[in-house]
Image 1 (cartoon, rainbow, N blue to C red):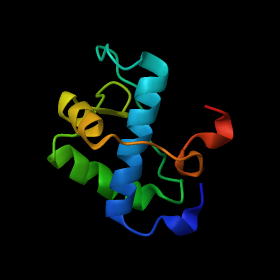
Image 2 (cartoon, rainbow, N blue to C red):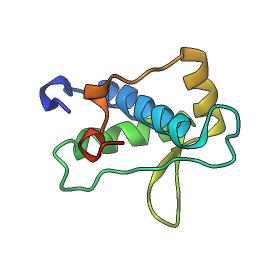
Image 3 (cartoon, rainbow, N blue to C red):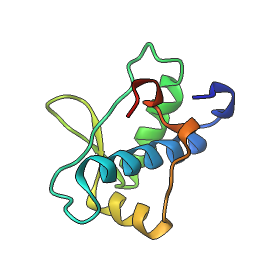
Image 4 (cartoon, rainbow, N blue to C red):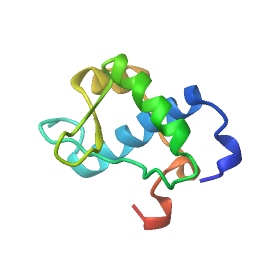
Length: 102
């Protein structure tokens, strides 16, 4: 991921949603949303301050929530509906996990 492209919490909010939506569909399909794909960034990650601000905002909007067991974040039903409505897509260079080949 090109860190110079990340300059604000609003941009990070968009990237978090796009990553959650991309991997949700990739791992669990597009029709059965009983399972949720989750992720988080560690505090050591250079983008963590932006990520933390984005997560707080997205949680307030009801688009994401946190798994209390592992501290990872996932799309809520409202978040899934938002991503579907906005037809969100994710460019390869914006994938948080491109280095892992997923």
